Amino acid sequence: MVQKLIRELNEQNATLVAVSKTQPIEALQIIYNAGHRIFGENRVQELVHKYEVLPKDIQWHFIGHLQSKKVKQIAPFINLIHSIDSLKLLQEVNKQALKNDRIIDCLLQFKIAIEDTKYGMHLTDAEQFFSSPDFLSLKNIRIVGIMGMASFVSDELQVREEFKQLKQIFDQLKNTYFSDIDAFKELSMGMSGDYKIALEEGSTMVRIGSLLFGRRYYG
Ligand SMILES: *Cc1c(COP(=O)(O)O)cnc(C)c1O
Image (cartoon, rainbow, N blue to C red):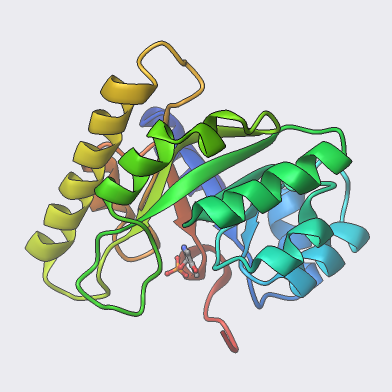
């Protein structure tokens, strides 16, 4: 399964994040043994545990809502945080990255879904953000793109519309603030149920859990 999916994504120049939240170590080990190295988790404690017991060449992505007070636990090793939704959180990531003498890559999470349970910023928040001196002073984070989650609905048109909206936000930010910054290139969108639509709408990074691992037991 994983090899077929990786091949499909390679053809589209998209990165696979294997979303391993709630899965036991052995399940990650199987995907690791198949050659995959990028895993996504959404709970700090669980992530730290998995980081400690699994091989150190894994690139760990944090994909869930992140509380500022927990950033320090993942700052020593995290590769990409998908879920930056405030300047306050980004400042904390910067502070902890500095302490670890690292630069941490981040994506800004945008709210595109109609459901109001999903976290994220709006374009106007981001525009304020990038114009603020507080943002410009952050030297230990690097914004490499944006992330969003579509509504969990069966209406394909709705989902596609939301992905189009996220792509527009990406283009707008790229053109306005990052036109000469090559590192700003990731559009993290698409999950097990909607990744094909996401790829058609320009996704560069899909976050896939249940399709790879089977059903989750909690979370
Ligand atoms: C759980 C989760 C996924 C993966 O969901 P699947 O439907 O299992 O592929 C992707 N992104 C985020 C932010 C998640 O929390």
